[in-house]
Image (cartoon, rainbow, N blue to C red; front, side, top):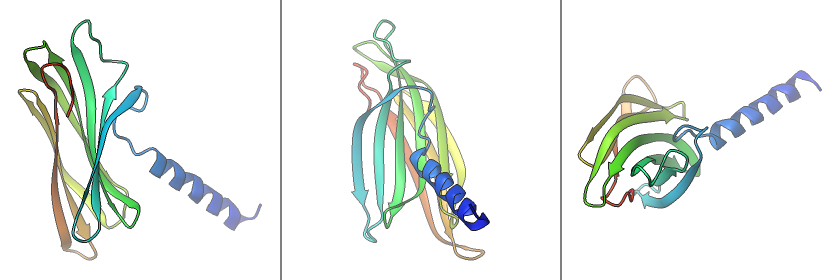
Length: 159
């Protein structure tokens, strides 16, 4: 196999794993998709939001639930960047409480840069925030501040 073919094969394998393993939570933890929603913008780009529940950590015995909500920004069929919040909750049937939150955000496009990542939790909500900026030169051509909020109701349902 000549050098160009080796480089091409390596590039294809790298791209495959990059796009197929967009990390939304701990990959070692088994997850199940709870919901999926798409919001289209005027320029035909869109946000795809998916809620995952961790099927290994969650137990009915102690009324705990851990989930992840990921919003991915896509245009022209390509994943450009995402913001994801993972929250852990306790619930009793009459109330619920978030006990921790963490954020992940990453760009998969050389022109989009991610900054200002932060997470917080209060009441029954876990929040993750990040700023995505589009650069074609030294100054940003576009800025999107994205907040992702994961909620848990008193029966342990995530939204």
